[in-house]
Length: 366
Ligand SMILES: *Cc1c(COP(=O)(O)O)cnc(C)c1O
Image (cartoon, rainbow, N blue to C red; front, side, top):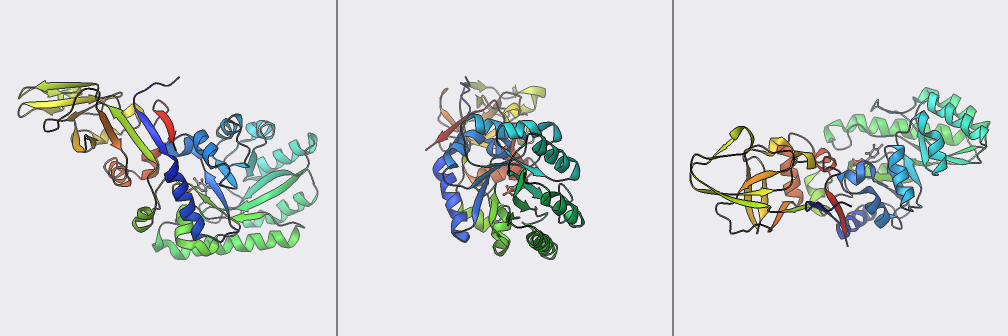
């Protein structure tokens, strides 16, 4: 049992608000796939999925074991595994997960497994590379894929999809529109040769924000569910879902000239009061936040991190704050705080969220 006092509260109302915000941007018929990979972007993929399961059409995870965790938690919603490996295919079927087949090696392996089992109309997804050059078939693979699919009723293509390389960057609009057109062309060829019509999807969060016309049959929302739209105006419409809280373990009164933390990085210039908080880089706080770059809130006042961030702790300056050992500490509870942490950590909010480690206790708050 995890009884760490450093707790990430996942705000269920905020998740629902964000989901509804994206729903109202879309056609009522457009399906929603909630991306819960990487522990629900550093929260708790299982708790998030249990909360969202009757509100969305699909879930996606990156890896097979992430999907298994959802199935073991009795999540019944279809689950797309975005990045399976050949070694995982048997397990994928056992847990009724739906594989993305992105190259001939894994496509052929799955068809072989489906033939041998035999499976009937097992749901698979086929990904096309339209410019990201990460995972996916090329459009000139189309004819072989189609001819193989025509020979079997052991699998059924549930969806065709692709992924945008720069959906948040309007300076890359021309490139993105080209990706969208390529995808539409591939889908058309597919529909022409197959006697059924798989779902089509290409948009992630900022795809929905910037290219909603290309919503096709489904959209894949990740970061947006967790409160960020990769755009200030959008983010303002969303609610923060990740609230990291802790408590003060100890308060020290130190004299001028004394130092705080490893390498004696903070040197007190005057009589000071410091608070030690049980959250460190092993919980996901970057060392770049040390030495007054980062801050927390204690009793509604800003307390700067002094000295280096330790593995398990930070020390903050509370000289001017009325506080006691055991008082609550807000490490972050707003989009502004998270954006600040990401900026100081020289990264993007995606990484700040997913960095929240497994040691932190996770609680979904309704
Ligand atoms: C992670 C991921 C998403 C979600 O992207 P967001 O920008 O977080 O909405 C969608 N599709 C694929 C293929 C992904 O890997």
